[in-house]
Image 1 (cartoon, one colour):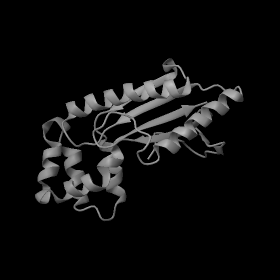
Image 2 (cartoon, helix red, strand yellow; image 1 turned 90 degrees about the horizontal axis):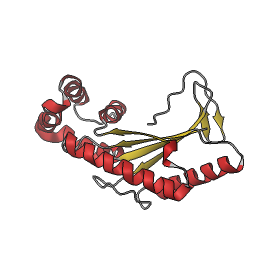
Image 3 (cartoon, one colour; image 1 turned 180 degrees about the vertical axis):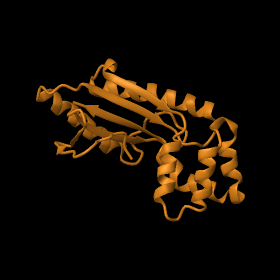
Length: 185
């Protein structure tokens, strides 16, 4: 899953994808352990992603090809309260932007930031592409018809004795705990 939206034909150019405006974009994804707000290179492919990001920014500078913008979006899973998740992604955002600025020398004014306290869209994408997701139709119905602030997560926890919720927690939630960093040149 990425936040790039490329309409029509797109060309892969030096690790970038051309977007509909003709700009070049490259997305990097950094994962977090559960409800941790600290960026850690030892998690999954974070070290590799950060090295690629640093290399890309260095090559852009060497080629005199300026970075127009770096979009940073911090996400959390649906687990827990919305307010706790909002606080978590805000802490992640501060931590990650400070870390990235210190590592790359890119000024924070190049960053365009956004937070998504509960990544329901990401969860629905996982549900819709997983043939083994129990009661996917009923889960999607709850997500579509129950407001987040009016017990959506609670209803999911109660559905079929909690089996679909436990499945989602084991298979999807850890993948929703992330930061997506899009470099635009």
